[in-house]
Length: 220
Image (cartoon, rainbow, N blue to C red):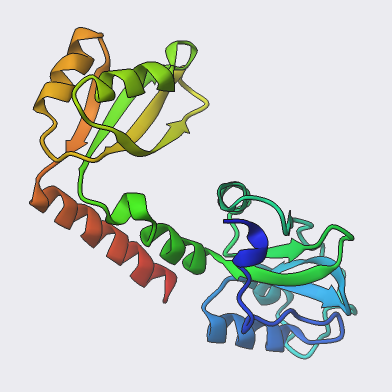
């Protein structure tokens, strides 16, 4: 899925002539903490709720202020994963989307992306989850896949998280089996460090509750 397929038609951009009061009203109405500022089809920048509150003059227009807006956007052909990464890196609740000619064509929201992610096949399909700690220089998805497939299973999805203060990365894999005992034994034989596993129904109930709580927070 690419960015152009993520656009929410009901999310309007602000015009430079509109006030900070209107910006705050729309942020409250659409349950976001950011909005794009657009002059006709030209993307100007992103205004945040914090910016609007700092101005403390609801009747002042955006163009009459000295506010410095974030110039963050994505192009219509970028993959959903790239969109999500850019939103996370910049702590945004919306992402403006431009076409190949740099014209603004719409925006998407963090809550919308989370809803799409929760409806993907790999999340809905039954199975187990394994979280591995791997030295970044030793990471090989091919080897991890080989271990899983040698136990008559397959990886449905995977993702990596890393931290600047360590050389280790966390590799999370979703597998199409809930019974993970044989796979875990094989990982141990290959000296992989298993951090967490989720294979029982109550494990997934806990994960679903965490996700539901996150979605509720985004809707506040």
